Amino acid sequence: MSLETPAPKAGDWLVDGQVGALNWERGAGVGTVAVGDTLATFSAAGESSNGWIPVREGRGPADTSLSLYDWTASGRFLRDFGRAVGALRISAYQENRGAGTIYAGSRARGGQVSLTAEADPSPGLWGWRGQLWALASDLANTSASVSTNQKTASLSDNQFATPALGLGANAAARRVWTHTTFEIGADARADGGEDRENFNNVRGVLTKQRRAGGETFDGGVYAEGTESLGRLLLTADGRLDDWQTFDGHDIERPSTSPSKGVETNYGSRGGVIPSGRAGARYDLDGFEWLRTAIYAGFRPPTLNELFRSFRVGNNVTKANPYLVPERLYGGEGGAGGTRGAFTWTLTVFYNRLNNPVTNVTLRDGPYTDPVVGFVPAGGALLQRENVGAVNAYGAEGTADLKITSSLSLQTAFDWTHARVDGGKAAADLDGLRPAETPAVVMTAFATWAPLQRVKIIGGLRHEGERFVDDQNRLPLAAATVVDVRAEYSVSSRVTLFIAADNLFDAAVQQNESVAGLYSYGPPRVVSAGVRLAGGR
Image (cartoon, rainbow, N blue to C red; front, side, top):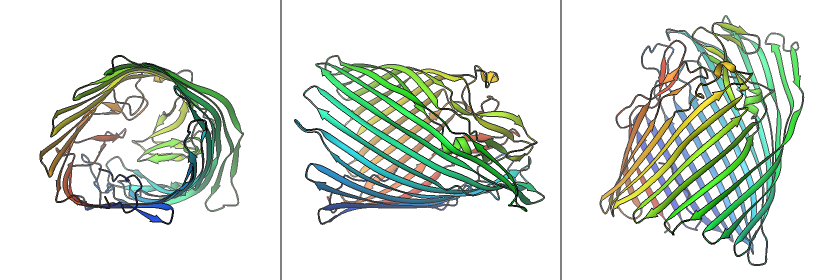
Protein backbone atom coordinates (compact mmCIF):
# COMPACT_ATOMS: atom_id res chain seq x y z
CA MET A 1 0.00 0.00 0.00
CA SER A 2 1.44 3.37 -1.00
CA LEU A 3 1.67 6.27 1.39
CA GLU A 4 -0.82 8.98 0.42
CA THR A 5 -0.16 12.68 0.88
CA PRO A 6 -2.93 14.29 2.95
CA ALA A 7 -4.57 17.56 1.95
CA PRO A 8 -2.25 20.37 3.09
CA LYS A 9 -3.05 21.34 6.67
CA ALA A 10 -0.52 22.74 9.11
CA GLY A 11 0.52 20.19 11.69
CA ASP A 12 -0.56 17.08 9.76
CA TRP A 13 2.01 14.30 9.54
CA LEU A 14 2.11 10.60 8.68
CA VAL A 15 4.94 8.10 8.97
CA ASP A 16 5.08 4.39 8.24
CA GLY A 17 7.76 1.72 8.31
CA GLN A 18 7.74 -1.84 7.04
CA VAL A 19 10.09 -4.87 7.11
CA GLY A 20 9.65 -8.24 5.45
CA ALA A 21 11.04 -11.21 3.58
CA LEU A 22 13.88 -10.84 1.08
CA ASN A 23 15.46 -8.41 3.56
CA TRP A 24 12.88 -5.86 2.47
CA GLU A 25 12.83 -2.59 4.36
CA ARG A 26 10.70 0.42 3.61
CA GLY A 27 10.04 3.73 5.29
CA ALA A 28 8.05 6.80 4.31
CA GLY A 29 6.85 10.02 5.83
CA VAL A 30 4.93 13.16 4.95
CA GLY A 31 4.14 16.27 6.94
CA THR A 32 2.85 19.83 6.54
CA VAL A 33 4.00 22.92 8.42
CA ALA A 34 3.07 26.60 8.23
CA VAL A 35 5.92 29.00 7.43
CA GLY A 36 4.35 32.44 7.68
CA ASP A 37 1.61 32.55 5.01
CA THR A 38 3.02 29.50 3.23
CA LEU A 39 2.04 25.87 3.74
CA ALA A 40 5.04 23.59 3.22
CA THR A 41 4.54 19.85 2.70
CA PHE A 42 7.60 17.59 2.80
CA SER A 43 7.69 13.90 1.95
CA ALA A 44 10.38 11.24 1.70
CA ALA A 45 10.52 7.49 1.18
CA GLY A 46 13.18 4.83 0.91
CA GLU A 47 13.20 1.13 0.13
CA SER A 48 15.75 -1.67 -0.06
CA SER A 49 15.61 -5.40 -0.74
CA ASN A 50 17.96 -8.24 -1.58
CA GLY A 51 15.35 -9.27 -4.13
CA TRP A 52 14.75 -12.67 -5.70
CA ILE A 53 16.40 -14.66 -8.48
CA PRO A 54 13.92 -14.49 -11.38
CA VAL A 55 15.05 -17.74 -13.09
CA ARG A 56 13.80 -20.93 -11.44
CA GLU A 57 14.06 -23.90 -13.80
CA GLY A 58 17.51 -24.16 -15.36
CA ARG A 59 19.06 -21.66 -12.94
CA GLY A 60 22.86 -21.36 -13.19
CA PRO A 61 25.83 -19.47 -11.76
CA ALA A 62 25.10 -16.51 -14.07
CA ASP A 63 21.78 -15.81 -12.32
CA THR A 64 21.65 -13.26 -9.49
CA SER A 65 18.99 -11.43 -7.50
CA LEU A 66 16.83 -8.50 -8.56
CA SER A 67 18.09 -6.31 -5.74
CA LEU A 68 16.67 -2.85 -5.10
CA TYR A 69 17.67 0.33 -3.32
CA ASP A 70 15.77 3.57 -3.91
CA TRP A 71 14.79 6.85 -2.30
CA THR A 72 12.66 9.83 -3.22
CA ALA A 73 12.08 13.20 -1.57
CA SER A 74 9.91 16.20 -2.36
CA GLY A 75 8.82 19.56 -1.02
CA ARG A 76 5.70 21.51 -1.98
CA PHE A 77 5.09 25.12 -0.99
CA LEU A 78 1.57 26.55 -1.29
CA ARG A 79 0.52 30.17 -0.75
CA ASP A 80 -2.62 32.26 -1.33
CA PHE A 81 -2.34 35.56 -3.19
CA GLY A 82 -5.86 36.93 -3.00
CA ARG A 83 -7.84 35.18 -5.75
CA ALA A 84 -4.78 33.25 -6.88
CA VAL A 85 -2.89 30.36 -5.37
CA GLY A 86 0.79 29.73 -6.08
CA ALA A 87 2.64 26.45 -5.66
CA LEU A 88 6.29 25.45 -5.95
CA ARG A 89 7.23 21.76 -6.01
CA ILE A 90 10.75 20.29 -5.96
CA SER A 91 11.49 16.56 -6.03
CA ALA A 92 14.42 14.20 -6.52
CA TYR A 93 14.92 10.42 -6.70
CA GLN A 94 17.51 7.68 -7.12
CA GLU A 95 17.04 3.99 -7.83
CA ASN A 96 19.66 1.22 -8.00
CA ARG A 97 18.61 -2.21 -9.31
CA GLY A 98 20.21 -5.55 -9.91
CA ALA A 99 19.05 -7.01 -13.22
CA GLY A 100 19.11 -10.71 -12.31
CA THR A 101 22.35 -11.53 -14.13
CA ILE A 102 25.98 -11.03 -13.19
CA TYR A 103 27.43 -7.87 -14.78
CA ALA A 104 23.91 -6.45 -15.30
CA GLY A 105 22.33 -3.65 -13.29
CA SER A 106 21.10 -0.06 -13.42
CA ARG A 107 21.13 3.23 -11.58
CA ALA A 108 18.55 5.93 -12.32
CA ARG A 109 18.43 9.38 -10.77
CA GLY A 110 16.81 12.71 -11.45
CA GLY A 111 14.86 15.67 -10.21
CA GLN A 112 11.97 17.93 -11.11
CA VAL A 113 10.88 21.46 -10.28
CA SER A 114 7.53 23.06 -11.14
CA LEU A 115 5.97 26.46 -10.48
CA THR A 116 2.20 26.83 -10.72
CA ALA A 117 -0.20 29.74 -10.24
CA GLU A 118 -3.97 29.57 -10.67
CA ALA A 119 -7.23 31.27 -9.85
CA ASP A 120 -10.66 29.62 -9.97
CA PRO A 121 -13.36 31.23 -12.10
CA SER A 122 -16.05 33.16 -10.28
CA PRO A 123 -19.24 34.95 -11.40
CA GLY A 124 -18.27 37.46 -14.06
CA LEU A 125 -14.56 36.63 -13.85
CA TRP A 126 -12.33 34.28 -15.81
CA GLY A 127 -10.26 31.72 -13.99
CA TRP A 128 -6.73 31.04 -15.17
CA ARG A 129 -3.77 28.70 -14.69
CA GLY A 130 -0.08 28.91 -15.60
CA GLN A 131 2.75 26.46 -15.03
CA LEU A 132 6.46 26.11 -15.77
CA TRP A 133 8.41 22.93 -15.11
CA ALA A 134 11.78 21.30 -15.73
CA LEU A 135 13.08 17.80 -15.13
CA ALA A 136 16.51 16.22 -15.46
CA SER A 137 17.34 12.51 -15.40
CA ASP A 138 20.23 10.14 -15.96
CA LEU A 139 20.39 6.36 -16.30
CA ALA A 140 23.45 4.14 -16.12
CA ASN A 141 22.78 0.58 -17.26
CA THR A 142 24.95 -2.47 -17.88
CA SER A 143 23.76 -5.53 -19.83
CA ALA A 144 25.15 -9.03 -20.13
CA SER A 145 25.03 -11.86 -22.64
CA VAL A 146 24.25 -15.19 -20.97
CA SER A 147 25.11 -18.69 -22.16
CA THR A 148 22.14 -20.94 -22.99
CA ASN A 149 22.87 -23.10 -19.92
CA GLN A 150 22.97 -20.04 -17.62
CA LYS A 151 26.48 -20.96 -16.46
CA THR A 152 28.46 -18.01 -17.80
CA ALA A 153 27.85 -14.39 -18.73
CA SER A 154 29.87 -11.58 -20.23
CA LEU A 155 29.45 -7.81 -20.19
CA SER A 156 27.93 -6.85 -23.52
CA ASP A 157 27.01 -3.19 -23.11
CA ASN A 158 27.76 -0.36 -20.69
CA GLN A 159 25.40 2.59 -21.04
CA PHE A 160 27.37 4.63 -18.55
CA ALA A 161 25.25 7.79 -18.97
CA THR A 162 21.97 8.83 -20.61
CA PRO A 163 21.55 12.48 -19.57
CA ALA A 164 18.19 14.04 -20.46
CA LEU A 165 16.52 17.39 -19.85
CA GLY A 166 12.87 18.31 -20.28
CA LEU A 167 11.29 21.77 -20.18
CA GLY A 168 7.60 22.58 -20.32
CA ALA A 169 4.95 25.22 -19.89
CA ASN A 170 1.17 25.46 -20.01
CA ALA A 171 -1.40 28.19 -19.63
CA ALA A 172 -5.18 28.19 -19.63
CA ALA A 173 -8.18 30.46 -19.09
CA ARG A 174 -11.54 29.12 -17.84
CA ARG A 175 -15.04 30.59 -17.56
CA VAL A 176 -18.12 29.15 -15.87
CA TRP A 177 -21.74 30.11 -16.51
CA THR A 178 -24.92 28.60 -15.09
CA HIS A 179 -25.02 25.64 -17.48
CA THR A 180 -21.80 26.05 -19.43
CA THR A 181 -18.06 25.82 -18.87
CA PHE A 182 -15.36 26.83 -21.34
CA GLU A 183 -11.58 26.56 -21.27
CA ILE A 184 -8.91 27.59 -23.76
CA GLY A 185 -5.21 26.98 -23.37
CA ALA A 186 -1.81 26.14 -24.78
CA ASP A 187 1.04 23.89 -23.71
CA ALA A 188 4.52 23.02 -24.93
CA ARG A 189 7.24 20.52 -24.07
CA ALA A 190 10.84 20.24 -25.26
CA ASP A 191 13.11 17.28 -24.48
CA GLY A 192 16.73 16.52 -25.27
CA GLY A 193 18.93 13.60 -24.36
CA GLU A 194 21.84 11.40 -25.32
CA ASP A 195 22.84 7.76 -24.89
CA ARG A 196 26.55 7.33 -24.10
CA GLU A 197 27.75 3.75 -24.12
CA ASN A 198 30.57 1.29 -24.67
CA PHE A 199 29.66 -1.92 -26.47
CA ASN A 200 30.80 -4.81 -28.71
CA ASN A 201 32.61 -7.24 -26.42
CA VAL A 202 35.67 -8.80 -28.06
CA ARG A 203 37.59 -11.17 -25.79
CA GLY A 204 36.38 -9.40 -22.68
CA VAL A 205 36.90 -5.82 -23.93
CA LEU A 206 34.18 -3.41 -25.09
CA THR A 207 35.73 -2.21 -28.32
CA LYS A 208 33.29 0.49 -29.52
CA GLN A 209 31.89 3.76 -28.21
CA ARG A 210 28.61 5.40 -29.15
CA ARG A 211 26.91 8.73 -28.51
CA ALA A 212 23.37 8.83 -29.89
CA GLY A 213 20.56 11.25 -29.17
CA GLY A 214 18.57 14.24 -30.28
CA GLU A 215 15.75 16.58 -29.32
CA THR A 216 11.96 16.57 -29.58
CA PHE A 217 9.26 19.21 -29.29
CA ASP A 218 5.50 19.01 -28.89
CA GLY A 219 3.29 22.06 -28.48
CA GLY A 220 -0.33 22.88 -29.10
CA VAL A 221 -3.45 24.88 -28.42
CA TYR A 222 -6.81 23.56 -27.30
CA ALA A 223 -10.35 24.49 -26.40
CA GLU A 224 -12.90 22.50 -24.44
CA GLY A 225 -16.34 23.03 -23.04
CA THR A 226 -19.39 21.47 -21.41
CA GLU A 227 -23.11 22.21 -21.71
CA SER A 228 -25.68 20.96 -19.21
CA LEU A 229 -29.20 20.55 -20.61
CA GLY A 230 -31.17 19.13 -17.73
CA ARG A 231 -30.46 15.42 -17.66
CA LEU A 232 -28.16 15.67 -20.69
CA LEU A 233 -24.52 16.72 -20.39
CA LEU A 234 -22.55 17.44 -23.58
CA THR A 235 -18.76 17.72 -23.72
CA ALA A 236 -16.37 18.58 -26.54
CA ASP A 237 -12.73 19.50 -26.96
CA GLY A 238 -10.28 20.01 -29.80
CA ARG A 239 -6.50 20.33 -30.07
CA LEU A 240 -3.98 21.32 -32.72
CA ASP A 241 -0.41 20.14 -32.02
CA ASP A 242 2.93 20.65 -33.69
CA TRP A 243 5.51 17.90 -33.15
CA GLN A 244 9.18 18.01 -34.13
CA THR A 245 12.29 15.87 -33.83
CA PHE A 246 15.66 17.39 -34.66
CA ASP A 247 19.40 17.29 -33.99
CA GLY A 248 19.35 13.48 -34.23
CA HIS A 249 22.83 11.99 -34.31
CA ASP A 250 24.74 8.74 -33.89
CA ILE A 251 28.51 8.92 -33.41
CA GLU A 252 30.40 5.62 -33.28
CA ARG A 253 34.12 5.32 -32.61
CA PRO A 254 36.64 2.55 -31.82
CA SER A 255 37.49 2.59 -28.10
CA THR A 256 41.19 2.48 -28.92
CA SER A 257 40.98 5.42 -31.37
CA PRO A 258 38.30 7.82 -30.12
CA SER A 259 39.45 10.47 -32.61
CA LYS A 260 38.32 8.23 -35.46
CA GLY A 261 34.80 7.13 -36.19
CA VAL A 262 31.61 7.52 -38.17
CA GLU A 263 29.00 10.21 -37.50
CA THR A 264 25.45 9.92 -38.80
CA ASN A 265 23.08 12.88 -38.61
CA TYR A 266 19.32 12.60 -39.05
CA GLY A 267 17.27 15.33 -40.67
CA SER A 268 14.59 17.26 -38.83
CA ARG A 269 11.04 15.97 -39.14
CA GLY A 270 7.66 17.09 -37.86
CA GLY A 271 4.11 18.05 -38.63
CA VAL A 272 0.80 19.41 -37.35
CA ILE A 273 -1.82 16.99 -36.01
CA PRO A 274 -5.45 17.71 -35.01
CA SER A 275 -7.18 15.71 -32.31
CA GLY A 276 -10.35 15.94 -30.27
CA ARG A 277 -13.17 14.32 -28.37
CA ALA A 278 -16.95 14.66 -28.16
CA GLY A 279 -19.16 13.00 -25.60
CA ALA A 280 -22.57 12.91 -23.98
CA ARG A 281 -24.02 11.61 -20.73
CA TYR A 282 -27.72 11.17 -20.00
CA ASP A 283 -29.12 10.75 -16.50
CA LEU A 284 -31.99 8.26 -16.74
CA ASP A 285 -33.66 8.55 -13.35
CA GLY A 286 -31.16 9.82 -10.82
CA PHE A 287 -29.85 6.29 -10.27
CA GLU A 288 -28.67 5.06 -13.69
CA TRP A 289 -26.97 6.86 -16.58
CA LEU A 290 -25.84 6.33 -20.17
CA ARG A 291 -22.82 7.84 -21.89
CA THR A 292 -21.05 7.78 -25.24
CA ALA A 293 -17.93 9.34 -26.76
CA ILE A 294 -15.87 9.47 -29.94
CA TYR A 295 -12.25 10.60 -29.97
CA ALA A 296 -9.02 10.98 -31.89
CA GLY A 297 -5.56 11.37 -30.37
CA PHE A 298 -1.89 10.95 -31.06
CA ARG A 299 1.44 10.18 -29.35
CA PRO A 300 4.78 11.32 -30.77
CA PRO A 301 7.75 8.94 -30.44
CA THR A 302 9.91 9.39 -27.35
CA LEU A 303 13.63 10.09 -27.16
CA ASN A 304 14.22 6.48 -26.07
CA GLU A 305 12.29 5.06 -29.00
CA LEU A 306 14.06 7.33 -31.47
CA PHE A 307 17.64 7.18 -30.27
CA ARG A 308 18.32 4.68 -27.43
CA SER A 309 18.90 1.01 -28.20
CA PHE A 310 18.70 -1.40 -25.27
CA ARG A 311 19.34 -5.00 -24.28
CA VAL A 312 17.29 -7.31 -22.04
CA GLY A 313 19.16 -10.54 -21.43
CA ASN A 314 20.19 -11.88 -24.81
CA ASN A 315 17.59 -9.83 -26.72
CA VAL A 316 18.75 -6.57 -28.31
CA THR A 317 16.33 -3.88 -29.49
CA LYS A 318 17.52 -1.14 -31.84
CA ALA A 319 16.23 2.42 -31.74
CA ASN A 320 14.69 3.99 -34.83
CA PRO A 321 15.22 7.70 -35.61
CA TYR A 322 12.60 7.59 -38.39
CA LEU A 323 9.54 6.79 -36.27
CA VAL A 324 6.35 8.84 -36.75
CA PRO A 325 3.55 9.55 -34.24
CA GLU A 326 0.94 6.96 -33.34
CA ARG A 327 -2.65 7.98 -34.20
CA LEU A 328 -5.64 6.74 -32.20
CA TYR A 329 -9.29 6.73 -33.36
CA GLY A 330 -12.10 5.25 -31.35
CA GLY A 331 -15.48 5.31 -29.77
CA GLU A 332 -17.16 3.92 -26.69
CA GLY A 333 -20.50 3.65 -24.99
CA GLY A 334 -21.34 2.88 -21.42
CA ALA A 335 -23.85 2.73 -18.64
CA GLY A 336 -23.77 2.73 -14.87
CA GLY A 337 -25.65 3.49 -11.74
CA THR A 338 -26.17 3.16 -8.03
CA ARG A 339 -28.99 1.32 -6.30
CA GLY A 340 -28.68 1.30 -2.56
CA ALA A 341 -25.41 -0.38 -1.61
CA PHE A 342 -24.61 -1.49 -5.20
CA THR A 343 -22.72 0.64 -7.74
CA TRP A 344 -21.80 -0.55 -11.24
CA THR A 345 -20.36 0.61 -14.58
CA LEU A 346 -20.06 -1.09 -17.97
CA THR A 347 -18.28 0.24 -21.08
CA VAL A 348 -17.84 -1.22 -24.56
CA PHE A 349 -15.26 0.26 -26.93
CA TYR A 350 -13.57 0.06 -30.32
CA ASN A 351 -10.15 1.55 -31.00
CA ARG A 352 -7.86 1.64 -34.01
CA LEU A 353 -4.24 2.63 -33.41
CA ASN A 354 -2.47 3.60 -36.64
CA ASN A 355 1.33 3.45 -36.87
CA PRO A 356 1.78 1.87 -33.41
CA VAL A 357 5.38 1.77 -32.22
CA THR A 358 6.29 -1.82 -31.40
CA ASN A 359 9.41 -3.97 -31.14
CA VAL A 360 9.60 -6.00 -34.35
CA THR A 361 11.75 -9.15 -34.47
CA LEU A 362 14.34 -8.95 -37.28
CA ARG A 363 16.17 -12.25 -36.74
CA ASP A 364 17.32 -14.72 -34.11
CA GLY A 365 20.87 -14.98 -32.78
CA PRO A 366 23.66 -15.71 -33.08
CA TYR A 367 24.14 -12.66 -35.26
CA THR A 368 26.43 -9.65 -35.39
CA ASP A 369 24.61 -6.42 -36.17
CA PRO A 370 26.68 -3.47 -37.49
CA VAL A 371 24.86 -1.06 -35.17
CA VAL A 372 24.36 -2.82 -31.81
CA GLY A 373 26.96 -5.58 -32.06
CA PHE A 374 26.69 -9.28 -31.25
CA VAL A 375 23.38 -11.02 -30.50
CA PRO A 376 24.11 -14.41 -28.89
CA ALA A 377 22.39 -17.76 -29.42
CA GLY A 378 19.09 -17.87 -27.56
CA GLY A 379 18.55 -14.18 -28.19
CA ALA A 380 16.89 -12.10 -30.89
CA LEU A 381 17.52 -8.83 -32.70
CA LEU A 382 14.54 -6.46 -32.69
CA GLN A 383 13.90 -2.89 -33.80
CA ARG A 384 11.30 -0.34 -32.91
CA GLU A 385 9.01 0.10 -35.91
CA ASN A 386 5.73 1.74 -36.89
CA VAL A 387 3.63 -1.23 -37.98
CA GLY A 388 0.37 -0.78 -39.86
CA ALA A 389 -2.28 -0.72 -37.12
CA VAL A 390 -3.75 -2.41 -34.08
CA ASN A 391 -7.51 -2.96 -34.01
CA ALA A 392 -9.02 -3.54 -30.59
CA TYR A 393 -12.54 -3.93 -29.25
CA GLY A 394 -13.76 -5.06 -25.88
CA ALA A 395 -15.56 -4.29 -22.67
CA GLU A 396 -14.67 -3.21 -19.17
CA GLY A 397 -16.70 -2.82 -16.03
CA THR A 398 -16.72 -2.33 -12.28
CA ALA A 399 -19.01 -3.36 -9.44
CA ASP A 400 -18.93 -2.20 -5.81
CA LEU A 401 -21.15 -3.75 -3.16
CA LYS A 402 -21.42 -2.86 0.51
CA ILE A 403 -22.64 -6.21 1.80
CA THR A 404 -22.90 -5.20 5.46
CA SER A 405 -21.69 -2.28 7.55
CA SER A 406 -18.40 -4.13 8.05
CA LEU A 407 -17.94 -5.94 4.71
CA SER A 408 -17.56 -4.47 1.20
CA LEU A 409 -16.49 -5.85 -2.17
CA GLN A 410 -15.01 -4.12 -5.22
CA THR A 411 -14.47 -5.91 -8.56
CA ALA A 412 -13.34 -4.91 -12.06
CA PHE A 413 -12.72 -6.63 -15.38
CA ASP A 414 -11.20 -5.74 -18.73
CA TRP A 415 -11.66 -7.91 -21.83
CA THR A 416 -9.84 -6.84 -24.99
CA HIS A 417 -9.68 -8.49 -28.40
CA ALA A 418 -6.64 -6.87 -30.05
CA ARG A 419 -5.05 -7.88 -33.34
CA VAL A 420 -2.24 -6.46 -35.45
CA ASP A 421 -2.57 -5.31 -39.05
CA GLY A 422 1.11 -5.28 -39.98
CA GLY A 423 0.72 -3.33 -43.22
CA LYS A 424 3.66 -3.17 -45.60
CA ALA A 425 6.20 -2.77 -42.79
CA ALA A 426 5.37 -6.05 -41.05
CA ALA A 427 2.90 -8.13 -43.07
CA ASP A 428 3.97 -11.26 -41.16
CA LEU A 429 2.33 -9.84 -38.02
CA ASP A 430 -1.18 -9.79 -39.54
CA GLY A 431 -3.73 -11.33 -37.19
CA LEU A 432 -1.35 -11.69 -34.25
CA ARG A 433 -1.92 -10.33 -30.77
CA PRO A 434 0.19 -7.29 -29.73
CA ALA A 435 3.03 -8.18 -27.37
CA GLU A 436 2.32 -8.02 -23.63
CA THR A 437 -1.45 -7.71 -24.19
CA PRO A 438 -3.58 -10.19 -22.22
CA ALA A 439 -7.14 -10.71 -23.39
CA VAL A 440 -8.53 -10.73 -19.84
CA VAL A 441 -7.62 -8.83 -16.68
CA MET A 442 -9.75 -9.16 -13.54
CA THR A 443 -9.38 -7.74 -10.04
CA ALA A 444 -11.32 -8.11 -6.82
CA PHE A 445 -10.86 -6.51 -3.40
CA ALA A 446 -12.71 -7.22 -0.17
CA THR A 447 -12.56 -5.15 3.02
CA TRP A 448 -13.80 -6.67 6.27
CA ALA A 449 -13.86 -5.02 9.68
CA PRO A 450 -14.91 -7.83 12.08
CA LEU A 451 -14.01 -5.67 15.10
CA GLN A 452 -13.89 -1.93 15.64
CA ARG A 453 -10.09 -1.83 15.68
CA VAL A 454 -9.45 -4.58 13.12
CA LYS A 455 -9.57 -4.36 9.32
CA ILE A 456 -8.68 -7.12 6.84
CA ILE A 457 -8.14 -6.36 3.15
CA GLY A 458 -7.89 -9.08 0.53
CA GLY A 459 -7.03 -8.53 -3.12
CA LEU A 460 -6.95 -10.75 -6.21
CA ARG A 461 -5.57 -9.99 -9.67
CA HIS A 462 -5.83 -12.32 -12.67
CA GLU A 463 -4.15 -11.80 -16.05
CA GLY A 464 -4.80 -14.08 -19.00
CA GLU A 465 -2.19 -15.52 -21.34
CA ARG A 466 -0.08 -13.02 -23.24
CA PHE A 467 3.00 -13.08 -25.47
CA VAL A 468 6.44 -11.62 -24.84
CA ASP A 469 7.16 -11.06 -28.50
CA ASP A 470 5.55 -9.65 -31.64
CA GLN A 471 5.70 -13.06 -33.38
CA ASN A 472 3.55 -14.73 -30.69
CA ARG A 473 6.16 -17.46 -30.30
CA LEU A 474 6.87 -16.87 -26.60
CA PRO A 475 3.70 -17.24 -24.51
CA LEU A 476 3.39 -16.36 -20.84
CA ALA A 477 0.87 -18.43 -18.90
CA ALA A 478 -2.16 -16.90 -17.22
CA ALA A 479 -1.60 -16.11 -13.56
CA THR A 480 -3.59 -15.20 -10.46
CA VAL A 481 -2.04 -13.38 -7.50
CA VAL A 482 -3.69 -12.98 -4.09
CA ASP A 483 -2.61 -10.34 -1.57
CA VAL A 484 -3.88 -9.96 1.99
CA ARG A 485 -3.36 -7.33 4.67
CA ALA A 486 -4.56 -7.03 8.26
CA GLU A 487 -4.54 -3.79 10.28
CA TYR A 488 -5.00 -3.18 14.00
CA SER A 489 -5.63 0.35 15.28
CA VAL A 490 -3.91 0.67 18.62
CA SER A 491 -5.25 4.22 18.80
CA SER A 492 -6.34 6.99 16.46
CA ARG A 493 -2.65 7.73 15.86
CA VAL A 494 -1.04 4.26 15.80
CA THR A 495 -1.83 1.41 13.42
CA LEU A 496 -0.03 -1.94 13.22
CA PHE A 497 -0.26 -4.05 10.07
CA ILE A 498 0.91 -7.33 8.59
CA ALA A 499 0.73 -8.18 4.89
CA ALA A 500 1.37 -11.09 2.55
CA ASP A 501 1.91 -10.24 -1.11
CA ASN A 502 1.42 -13.18 -3.49
CA LEU A 503 0.02 -15.17 -0.59
CA PHE A 504 -0.04 -18.51 -2.43
CA ASP A 505 3.38 -18.02 -4.03
CA ALA A 506 2.00 -18.09 -7.58
CA ALA A 507 4.61 -18.49 -10.32
CA VAL A 508 4.00 -15.42 -12.49
CA GLN A 509 5.94 -15.67 -15.75
CA GLN A 510 7.35 -12.32 -16.86
CA ASN A 511 9.69 -13.18 -19.71
CA GLU A 512 10.82 -16.07 -21.87
CA SER A 513 13.92 -16.34 -24.00
CA VAL A 514 14.20 -18.29 -27.27
CA ALA A 515 16.10 -20.89 -25.26
CA GLY A 516 12.91 -21.61 -23.30
CA LEU A 517 13.92 -20.26 -19.89
CA TYR A 518 11.34 -18.25 -17.99
CA SER A 519 11.87 -15.46 -15.51
CA TYR A 520 9.31 -14.98 -12.77
CA GLY A 521 7.82 -12.16 -10.74
CA PRO A 522 8.11 -11.78 -6.97
CA PRO A 523 7.49 -14.81 -4.75
CA ARG A 524 5.45 -14.66 -1.57
CA VAL A 525 6.62 -11.75 0.61
CA VAL A 526 5.38 -11.45 4.19
CA SER A 527 5.95 -8.10 5.91
CA ALA A 528 4.90 -6.17 8.98
CA GLY A 529 4.92 -2.51 9.87
CA VAL A 530 3.55 0.42 11.82
CA ARG A 531 1.88 3.67 10.80
CA LEU A 532 1.94 6.78 12.98
CA ALA A 533 -0.26 9.80 12.31
CA GLY A 534 -0.69 13.14 13.98
CA GLY A 535 -2.08 16.62 13.63
CA ARG A 536 -5.79 15.92 13.20
